[in-house]
Length: 275
Ligand code: VGL
Ligand code: ZN
Image 1 (cartoon, helix red, strand yellow):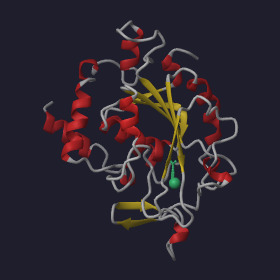
Image 2 (image 1 turned 120 degrees about the vertical axis):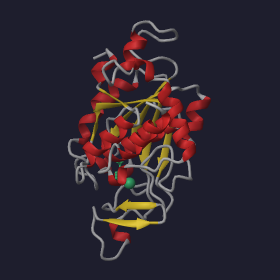
Image 3 (image 1 turned 45 degrees about the vertical axis):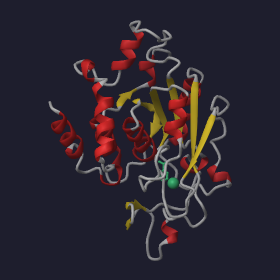
């Protein structure tokens, strides 16, 4: 497969992904291809655990815990009251990720947590657009925007981390979506694809090369974070049992297709060999 084929595959692999698919610029495609090259020698092994198995078998610089070393980071996405039972945008069984993530957090040298952190009257709220209802879409300058119930308004209890989530291990909290007119599913780049949160720079300065993404919701903020992590050149795995999805019009399956096409590894916490 040459680079063009690979690029085309990425473009066409997921025609139904709608809001989850991000345009690949020439520069970002180059970065993605560079990152993919690192995995290609392992392409015949089962998906999901390629790097983990390689590391477990004693690759230099690994700790003995499969795939985890000083260059690994855990990114805990949006485990906030709004996304669990009783919250304003509850993800089915969202709270079930908490014990899994708490066990994971202790394993990583670098842990980052994110909070969806919207202004009152944020552009992503249906209530900001007269005549529109939650889960409809509108076209904005930066692309299609799903409209949500009011959620995660900055400073409210709804926007706090879920009680019981172990955030003590988190060295950095990234708040995102606080620009009134721009949404940000991703922990790296806002939806205008221009404004960054600074997370890629932070991780690179901390010499992180591999990120493990977990949290809420699989098909929105987790997926966009994982796709941007790939585009920024990180080896990327999503820990499926440490995530839950919203599944809006097939968005959960579509997001997995997008992530798989981009080289994101779909793993389970058991693949880390510690539970
Ligand atoms: C999210 C919808 C709106 C998420 C955030 O965290 O996945 N989803 N805002
Ligand atoms: Zn939001």
